[in-house]
Length: 81
Image 1 (cartoon, helix red, strand yellow):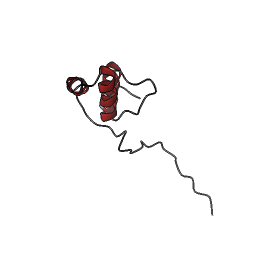
Image 2 (cartoon, one colour):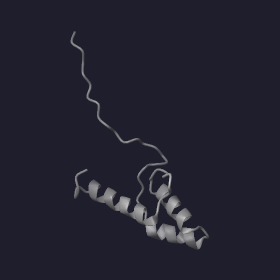
Image 3 (cartoon, one colour):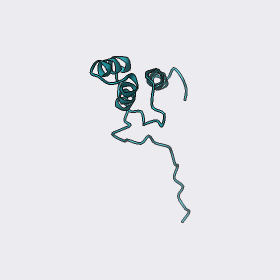
């Protein structure tokens, strides 16, 4: 009996904390700031809500929006990963 080979393919981790979510990052961050959070706190919470993992230095709103933009153009096929 010949050994069977199995193809190993990377699959995304389905984690409830880093699952992809469509959000309006700037709007959410602005509403959080109006509620009393600093820009840094609002940006980090917005990143978390968007499904981005925590970063050691935190997230800026520009970084969050840029990553969401890149994610969208890759998912629509306009840019190959």
